[in-house]
Image 1: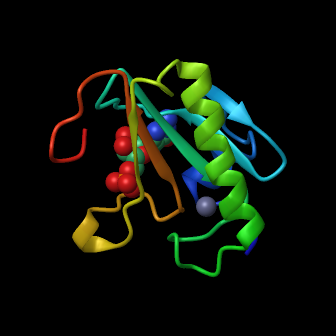
Image 2 (image 1 turned 180 degrees about the vertical axis):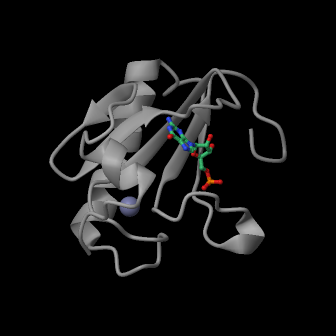
Length: 115
Ligand code: 5GP
Ligand code: ZN
């Protein structure tokens, strides 16, 4: 999968559009959600375009995403207090941006729903 010039998260992850970054390495980026639902609401996004978590994502990319979650949790100081990781896939999940992302949510007591 390549980088797509019509995809907002491809643009943010590859610095075509700048955002509020929390972590970055060769494979992934983490940046703050523009409409946060919790004190910490960070999106972990691969630099290559994949639509969902089951869209032929290389194992090393998935591992890099999990590593980024760990880095975000440490940087945000929510490792001990707890956090939630959510990845919406498709219409019934309400996926609004069709580029794979993990929501990392924490910083307060999360509800039973999403945040
Ligand atoms: P989804 O419903 O696809 O799982 O979530 C998409 C998330 O991306 C939403 O929480 C939304 O606020 C966030 N988002 C959409 N566009 C942008 C953007 O351009 N910048 C940032 N930082 N977040 C975005
Ligand atoms: Zn994309």
